[in-house]
Amino acid sequence: MNEEPNVSNQVYGGLTTIIRLLVFVSIAVGILLLARIIFLFFGSLKTVPGYGQVVTLTDSFIGPLKSIAPIKTPYDGIFDIAATGALMIALVLEFVLQSVQGYLERQSARARKAPADAPASAPDLSTIDDELVKK
Image 1 (tube, rainbow, N blue to C red):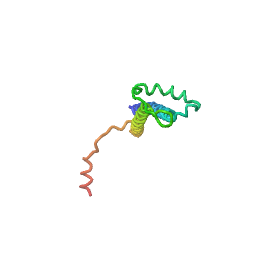
Image 2: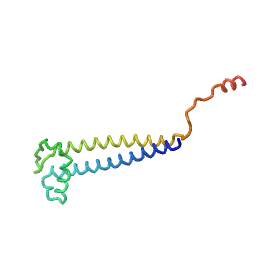
Image 3: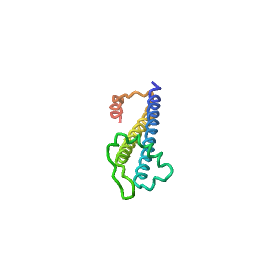
Image 4: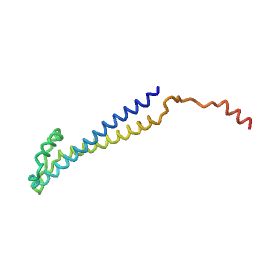
């Protein structure tokens, strides 16, 4: 029975690490999508190094939303609504993952504080009456 809190602590710790990595990935995807939105919004940024790589890399993240047509901007570019929608989804996903990570960290802290062999038992109330009568 001594191993139960340690095992649950290890499980919560492992899940927290995985969630932390997923949060990092969602933040990185969000940054790439934001760079795509800015690059496409200003058409003159086509000459910036890395423009093609960012646009082709983020194409896979906006795949399901590509049916939404972009809007032309007065800066010789387009406002990519699909990338904006994907960015919003990435931000919501990051928020949810952060919440789950916080929950798992609290559960891990509780598992560390839980006594290993202390079963929950009711206090012995029979001695309390005797002590009050003696006084």
